[in-house]
Amino acid sequence: MALLESSKNESIVYENGILYENEAEAAAENCGLKKPLRKIADKRIFEYKWFNMLTIGSLHVQAIYGAYLAITGHAKWQTLFFAYLLYIVSGLGITAGAHRLWSHRAYKAKWQLKLTLIIFNTIAFQNSLYHWCRDHRVHHKFSDTDADPHNATRGFFFSHCGWLLTKRHPLMITAGKRVDFSDLENDAFVMFQRKHGLWMFALFCFILPTYIPYYFWNETLLNAWLIPTCLRYVAVLNITWCVNSVAHIWGHKPYDKSILASQNVFVSIIALGEGWHNYHHIFPWDYKTAELGNYRLNLTTMFINFMAKIGWAYDLKTVNKETIDTRKKRTGDGTETNIWGWADPDQSKSDRAMAKIIFKNYN
Ligand SMILES: [Zn+2]
Ligand SMILES: [Zn+2]
Image 1 (cartoon, protein in one colour):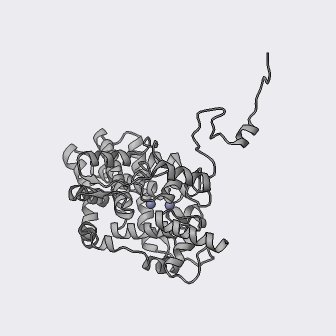
Image 2 (cartoon, protein in one colour):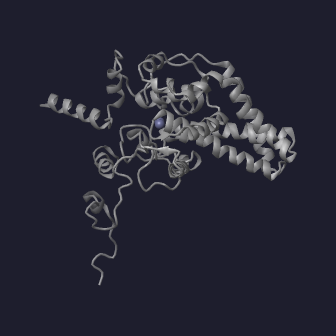
């Protein structure tokens, strides 16, 4: 009977695409890995990537000096505004581009939008789109195991940026080879950026953001380098990393309490709507990366909706409320249940029993 039930569950998993609590283990078996992956980090000796440490470290020092200059009024307002604009634009290159379009195929884009997003993404320079999507698909497929590039069970620092400063776990390389990336290999935009990345990143992420303020409003070269380039670049890097670290450590889990990914409002604000991470790991094909009604704090969804209105984005995938509610009831931690008030049929008996009623029978 138990066997029958489990095979029934598996067929549900693959029919409607909802991965269950044993997602990583099932995926591992599916990918032909010999041993099931556990949601813990094995002991390991790290091999450091010294070049990354030096470059990322020195950019952080320069960004901190840039922040000091920005706060203390040493830069022109146009430069500050330009830095903010680049933060939004390069952020969208990651959230609407690398993440929702290319990693998850949550919607489709016409060439005009792909071209826009590839430029936005190049300004953000977080490795090539191809490699970003590869890491991200493996992260979803093997979350919180050693095959996950930024395995959050290894702690905050590793999942934030430590994973970029050390050589990859062998299990991640094995797992990565078994995930399908053929759609990315057949995408001319992705492959163009992969091939010509070096000059594109230099131009869009570093040279133009420095030259534009210097040429158009006579900003000093030092300010132009430190604020819209170093500070903006490092800020967007850290914001993206927060999704892997903060949103895998702190927050509610209304959709599945067995995974580390959590709903984090702070991350949603800074990462243009990418902090609804418990939901996102359960329904990764939803273009909103959040449940209906959570449009606020989700600038990326507004952007994609606008693009759909002008016809550049289409086939926007989302999840119906019934499916979400069923999942919430089955595996959620009970937070974020919408009830209208006392005696709503959805109010749980335990909540009612635990309520403190004062002035009882007062008359
Ligand atoms: Zn994702
Ligand atoms: Zn995640």
